[in-house]
Length: 351
Image 1 (cartoon, one colour):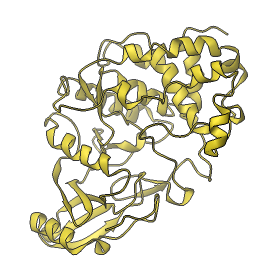
Image 2 (tube, one colour; image 1 turned 135 degrees about the horizontal axis):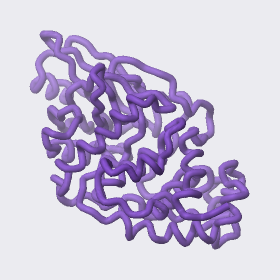
Image 3 (cartoon, helix red, strand yellow; image 1 turned 45 degrees about the horizontal axis):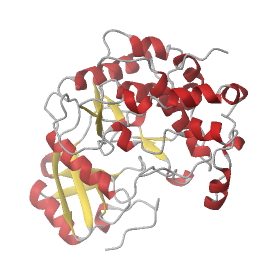
Image 4 (cartoon, one colour; image 1 turned 30 degrees about the vertical axis):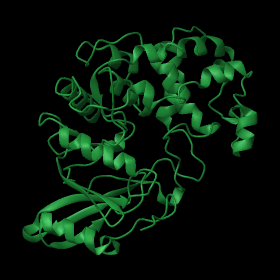
């Protein structure tokens, strides 16, 4: 069966092939209801099934030929291997039938945190990262990409900018139909004045991200669910990779709107997982990656920004909220802009 166009509309459970539905009901029992969810960055079907007796499970089928189907298959392998100590909904089963991949898991209780992060929610997320470090070291799954492999070609923007006088690869961008990076409002006077230093620090990042911890590697606020008791859980393990335990913390700090807390104080706190080097190299690479979508074609396996009409996120598995990105062209969230500013301090560049 051919999949829908990229970022096409979500489908209903009733639209799925009969063999796939039959396999799900064989494993789960009769399905009495389906509540669709519009959140996330994939298409296909996403929602909660209500079963005989009132039990509820979370399902996300997608066409087997979709460009993100590989992430679903990876998530199935990773989720099945996660130790019980890791706070995350348990995978119940996965299968492929009639051109579709289906993942079924427990329904995660709670809702996604607010942005800017509220103190209790940020504390819960940091506790989640700490709780995951020990049971996921060493990684319980073999053959996963490393952080450097996952990010190959996507943390080299400062070097490209410095090499091309602040217009990294404009010719290539023109051929790809993408605007030059010089048009990005986040490329400010400070970044232009310190491009050489940023590029030098950026070159060190791959040497810092070696380790044997299984990382979630996508700890955006909408991939964390916090229940009524203040316990945070990860959802969506499709981007997982292997590296040092502190990497997910850097990702969280760079990609989140923290509000007033000092990210450097959070990163260097003794209770945080892993032995942490100076954050400059990883922060420079990460901040370059945050700037990158404004002018560079997506790197390997990069996720394109979906149309505004599909860009929504779940407040929980049972509630919906508008996505803060808003409008048509992808814009930096406040947290991303803070990520570009905080790189000044983390990279040890004065000015």
